[in-house]
Length: 282
Image (cartoon, rainbow, N blue to C red; front, top):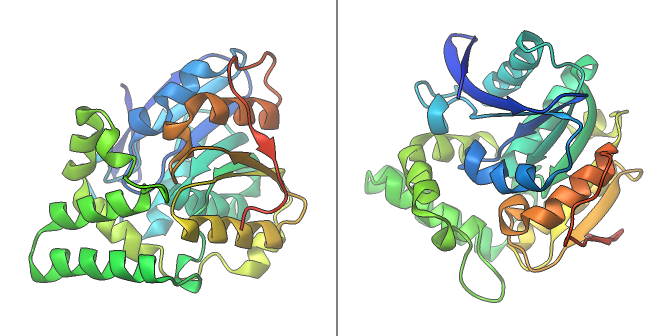
């Protein structure tokens, strides 16, 4: 996996294929192989696919981001360094907040967004589940000095199924170990996502095509945040994927790949994948 010197750190990235560029931007606590590998393997050829580990995560874990702006600037610099702008951005969860800011601040770099359950303005969607998860995670992190335990609790909550259990415990050991290794980056980013930015007015002014993807049995707060984005962007296409937690691209990679292929105009189809168009994720 090559690396690029970006804004004072080394960002490890991978790319395959040729054609119009697509940048995959992983969410909080994830890293590129876990977030995207199975989805990318299912995509038809014909596009230049770029993945990278964000600052503080996975192989790019040497330095931590001071705030979400670092991630926005990193993504912009990487696209420019690789000569990959404008690009479609495929993203999920906390990564979608970064993608929104990138599209708002640098519209010259982004020509489409595909966002799975964006964790947008989560603080404006309180619930007993969210409050309990955050209280326990902060207690473990600040009072018990147990960042790994705090991150593990958060991961299990964020990927829980309403039907019982969670997705995280079923991931390959390598993925789970990577998540634990960048616990501090994950926890810092959870707090960085609390301020309600970008502002609603800025989101409403987005002009690029947007596709929103929502699951049906994951943590409900993320369905509500997705609904918030949809109300701000009524022209957005909305796709629903069955039997999935919050991390749709990992739970249902073929279904997610089919949505990406459809939204971005890939030639060819993804076999064995179905999604349901819907207008009401919340």
